[in-house]
Length: 144
Image (cartoon, rainbow, N blue to C red; front, side, top):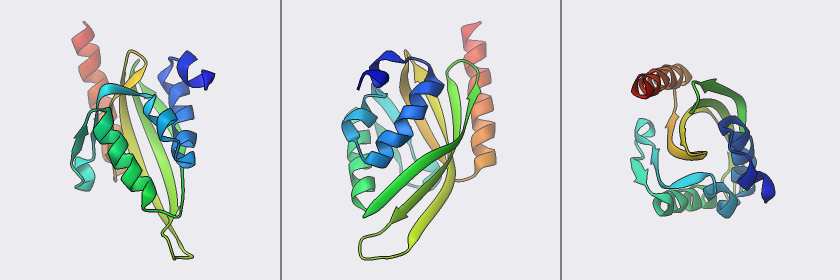
């Protein structure tokens, strides 16, 4: 898809990430991640995944767990040039179930060279916001 390869703005790229995840389009989804990206699920007790292959395998397992799955970014907030906070809603239905599971959480993304270098999900939105602010300040100081 041309949109994925031409836009380098982190906010615009994230507007494309969530629909790709909802479609379970792993090829498109992974095109947004650097080959050495890190997905840090430590806050949820799920560990850290390093590299595109490990991240893709996690997403395959995650999406495969659900009969239906949709994720949306309710808000996308920029903290500095390359740190983005998203506040999200995930709706999913387990196979054999008629009810949906709803998760409201937040992600902190660090972009480098137009790609996701680090993706950290948080269960607590206030903690995610504080982490995004800290990371943005650290990045600004490193650039000085």
